Image (tube, rainbow, N blue to C red; front, side, top):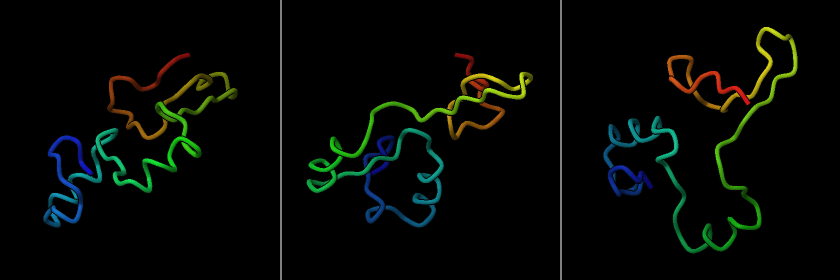
Length: 76
């Protein structure tokens, strides 16, 4: 489901699904099966990557952000 427009993919047009697939943090799984299983397999939060070398790029980064995103690189 796209939380910005409140529709599931089966309710969207092809163009809406294409746009929805690019919305970082706004696309979520819904339904009773996933709601039941999620706490046992998922950890909340944004995925991250910690680079240790080379020193010129060492630090913490959010996974999936483009270089044009103002939060990149996220320094820990």
